[in-house]
Length: 555
Image (tube, rainbow, N blue to C red; front, top):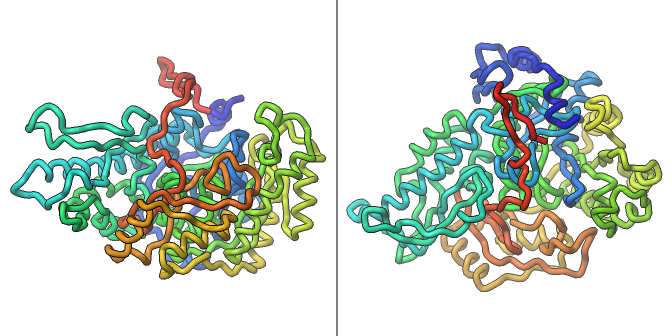
């Protein structure tokens, strides 16, 4: 059975029943049909949230073989519910780009999914559309201001940073020229499109504490500069009020359920190799206000999503996770051990051992934050006992628990042992979480800290453009912002060909973008893709709908 077949084999419970598990009365729900609803921000209890148990799920460096962090997050939540703990999972929303591109659906897999699968993967409750519209409203106001000389703030068309966005992979829109066709059509200039998940507004949504904070952050977006190099912010265009109005519903988290009827909150969806890669602060605090335990996930590997979750999101919102679950698969470890993609199903315990240094580095990184890691060995049918035992044995030598799980095939029943280990560790409360760096450090020191301690680099080099950007950051008084380093997810280094645990390398910062509204700066290493293209055979070719409205091909 495909993931979609499995999703269709379960009849969702009415959303009122799911809400009741969390103590939410029906009157508090803003229902979208019978199986999903938005939750009002009034349900957030910051005092209870501060005392609740937050569990982060992350992974080793991703490979084409897959790791399954979302599936594990959902399966672990279901398992924790089965052993008698009141638990919910808080996740990001899928982007249509990957859904129709190379990845397919992104709502978990097998018997560890959130449902309704089609709605979550497609338009859901319209949050991505609201982000897109708010972003493009600002873009329209920028070009209108250029056109209207009597109302101009003096923006230099050559120094505008703000592009447009759409929630679809379309490489042809990366670099475009607009305003052609005569004076009535605007000022000709070069610009482009990013994918919606890469919008700063998505990052802002995910770091805002409430609607007022969202509006303030929207006003702080750096749009560009005048000819005299004076900064122009969204508030200078009087844009933040209308943008916030478009976001009035998108700011509210979405309640759905897992296949086993466990509550799930899904909200926001920034990329993790460019932005912070985690769901919203609002959704996380909402989750922590309701049950006793909350499972959440950070995108890509521990060096990206988890580092940004801990150094940016937690530091910004005052969140204190109790434990980190690192997901590893035998196939991914063999890939890091040098095995070719088409040979990963062949038993090879030696290759697993050769790939273990990648996992070991991520385990070391988590301890730098004062947290206790637990390894979830996400099993596939091709895994052998010798291969799994190699991982468990090595983790035991390091004093870390490693628990084999099968949440894809067994749902919550496949992670009972992991759930017990997680609860035992959380209840022992040995964690002493602290971010890796203090935001008050100089920007270069913050970058160096992450590059050397988390990636394992020998140091950091800066291009002339990056040095110019550093001076600009200082001139604008933004030195105190955290760093959200844009880096390939495929390697601990900035070279996606260096697998395993590379050493003897240096990180090169090409440029540094300013996300003043989100509240971080973005040092860019390598070539970061903000508007992906479709693969030669996109997932869209397999997606269809019949005359009765039944969707097929999501996987």
